[in-house]
Image (cartoon, rainbow, N blue to C red):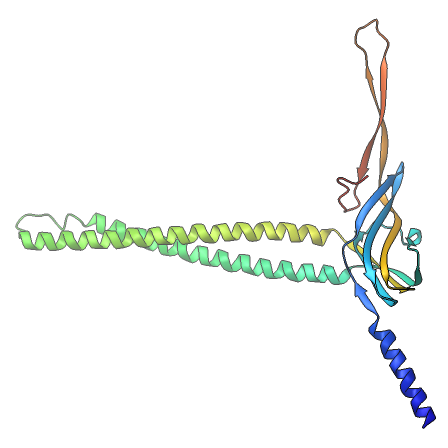
Amino acid sequence: MKRKEIFLLGLFVFSLCYAQQTFDTSQSDISSITVYLEGAEVHRTKKLTLQEGTHELVFEDLSSELDPQSIRLKCPNLTLLSLTHSYDFVNQRRLRKEIDILTQKQKSIQREIDLLNAEKRILMEEKQVLLANKELGGTDGLQASNLKEAMRYFRSSIDSIEKATLRKTFQVAEKQQRSQQINLQLQQVTKGEIKVRTYVNITGKAEETDTYELELSYTVGNCGWIPSYDVKAQRLDSPLSIVYYASVFQSTGIDWENVE
């Protein structure tokens, strides 16, 4: 009986600890970047509230130029249990699937446009036939009643053709607009597929329930800065003024705009 109580108590404690585990993929922000002649050091932060216990935290959408050996995590009161770096191949498969779906939609819309244009051509040919035969073989001897009936038929037919052609023109314009929207989506998704991303997965233990600020730092390649000089003089006999500045370049696949 005592052994059974101990087993149940252990199971309860295990279940309680397991229930405290969470999985966080919230967005992190680049807080600062230090650019060297070759390479740069990136600092990312994310702030979140954690309950006491074990948590799995993920820094997503990181550059493929990241050096895994340089990864460092700084967070007081969080005990680091594991840290791994991986390439986001799952996201790449999702992007390719999205591209396939958009491509099929694009082909379907183009087929509908082709059918509508074919129907417009048929309507135009019917109109040409009517116009070519509007003389009705001449009007000599044609009774007034027959002439009125013929003209009524002619007007009705031309009116129907013009309206049908106009409706199909509007339909083609709408589908072309939809096709352009899909093209823009394809361009955006294709850019995402070209840019391979990586992520850092962290398992940590929170010592107490509190708000934690995690700072992840790492170095990236394919970036740096080039020294440049701007030499100016007010007049030929005046002293030269030399302005020294740096031109930063980077092809890490991550936007550095508005980052210190």
